[in-house]
Image (tube, rainbow, N blue to C red; front, side, top):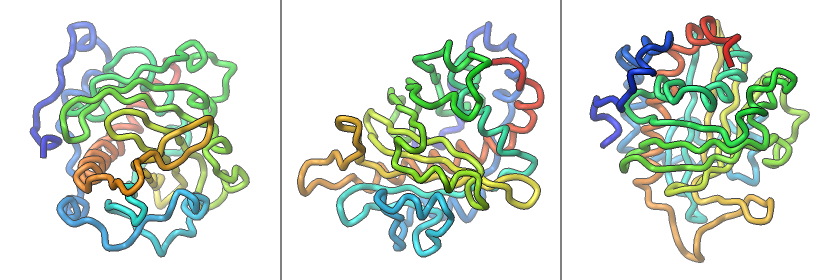
Length: 266
């Protein structure tokens, strides 16, 4: 799979001079063997449907796939992943999602130096505005992202949403299995609805990711965007799963340090 070439993306002289370039130079964190073993094994357990996404938010989706990928009966694809992040707090993740979308492209590159090229917010002034609560800095903001999720570099527009506009019950946020989250709709070669939620776990946090591939936004509504009878190729879900376990394993290894050194630098 192209995601595991070991070749890093290019960086500029200006990027090399930045204090967080050292995170780019490090070897990527080792992905747990049990997650790697699932790359060639589509899940036999179905994913929670987008219609039932509040079960996921509340942590009441144990009957559904927690780590893996596949294609649902309606032809949409799915990816699920859980990442334990020792030493990380929810506040760090609230900060990370807006922080990496402004400033230098290097901010996105250190997340996954082999597959991330850039992420740029369309409302940088809003993201950097100190009067905007950090938990809201992705709401209504589009991140234009260039990354490789298995088939070469691809441009994706991720339209981040306020949770209620994504269809989530906001009363669940702040409860035991959902401290906070980031959610949105990605448009590009692999259109999908996505959510990353997190909550305190052991001496850090557990971050839980879900992707519903093949969903799109029409007139403000999130709907199935595939032609009648069409199905997402399982290879698309496999590539996204492989990318997700790679990028979040690496983020877990660097985030606490990146935050400590850059939290006041938007």
